[in-house]
Image (tube, rainbow, N blue to C red; front, top):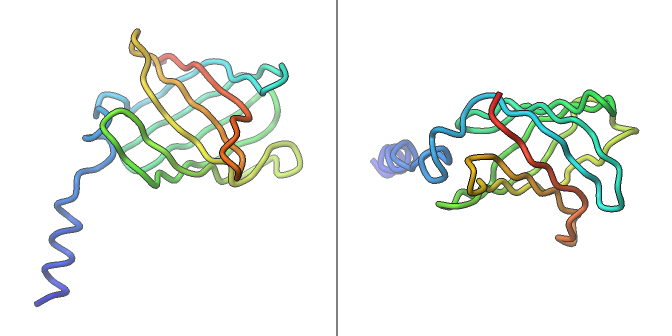
Length: 123
């Protein structure tokens, strides 16, 4: 009986999309910028429980695992799928919306220092 109660409570937990805004799901694109200057294109497909991301200019691809969901922010980890010698695996990520309905992404190192940012618009 306790196991059934646990399963039902997990099923009832809100998805991140409900806490940030379900309208964020879909395709986004824009530019990212490494701290220190390098600029690169980013394409993102965001869905309720994660994201798939492509960095065509630098030959990397990744998927995002969300770990914390708040009303105004989602945080998680970026896992590389391609370009292991070109990009940083296991970076922290933080997603926020901006005043114009765009999406802001911030990447952090293990110490929490910002290493890159991106401004994305819906495609």
